[in-house]
Image 1 (cartoon, rainbow, N blue to C red):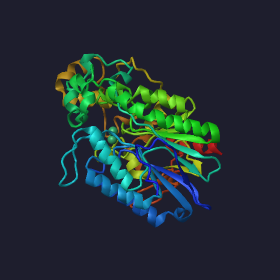
Image 2: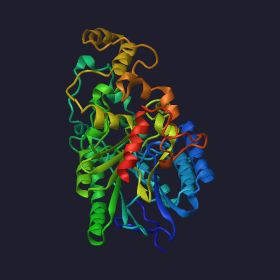
Image 3: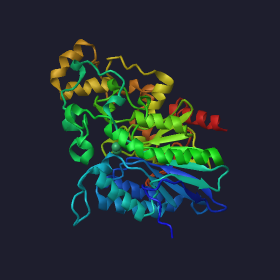
Image 4: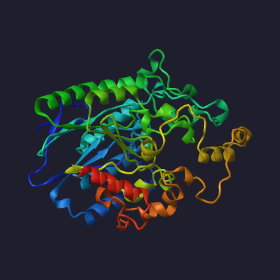
Length: 444
Ligand SMILES: [Zn+2]
Ligand SMILES: [Zn+2]
């Protein structure tokens, strides 16, 4: 029997949806199962699937996992096994947390470097029949090609100017980014001009190295598409385009754009021209269309983020990206902000109020400068920040999120604890319900 195709397979593997079944793709990135709370959340979603999913028996289900599932090898295996029992197939590509050269199995020596750690992760995938190379789904109206794209970030991907030094918090990015301590790059680190960490910088070497691996996959997928048709969904852990992350003035950590994306990845996506590209890593959900390609980021994030920036994902669950038809573009705050409210203004030094307010509290030495620039407005009440968001207070308070815990229920695999709520909600001026109705109307 042919061995199960793993990360070292250059070919496209055909998977046939059984007759009479519909094909569904669920998506969740950045599950970070190392957090106990996240593991419980995942189990709750799976329980929900087996208990309430009436379509389960006639569906063939794929789970897309674009990285940062887990660092620990034992927990990676345990959680992946639980997922593999709930879905018919899983497609995985690694994130930076899988590349941390620790978290070895009990009784095993730590991986020598991150490449060895990733080999171990891919061995686990193979033993659980989780796909890490390209797949073609057959038995649909037209074939669907699922293409993993390996990647890593490099600092030169960030093409937007830094904020003036007086508006930057006194932080040492080299110390703050755990990757710089926990990833080891073996002989690649000896290449001339290789930089990983000092000054918070990352040279292009890693981005290039991982992009090289994709070339054989891209050729095989494009060749098959040319000969036999079909559409492509590509997926990566890192972010391909800067339009898909926050501007520095909106982010507490202004160093984030230097550890987020890869232009090599962007170039490959342009060549592949997928219908959808799915990514992970930034933990700020996004769903938008750029130059004809839909880009989706649907992260769970760490427990602290689940009360804020990933609250919608925490409350409403996995995204059902494809259910015979593609889901409409989902409401995500920041994609909405840039698509409908304001274009990017990378030259602007107008820090968002929640950023300047936070800086003034944590770094009192910045206060005078922030005040001088008029960046410390009086903030009243718990909703003081929300006037900045689409629709103001109405659309960004706790009640808003609660009311929409199950908005778009049709396109979610929610935690077991969530009860279905009315859609549209009772508020006639609700931005999310209006957005959802508009998108679903556009699809028909
Ligand atoms: Zn992550
Ligand atoms: Zn990541």
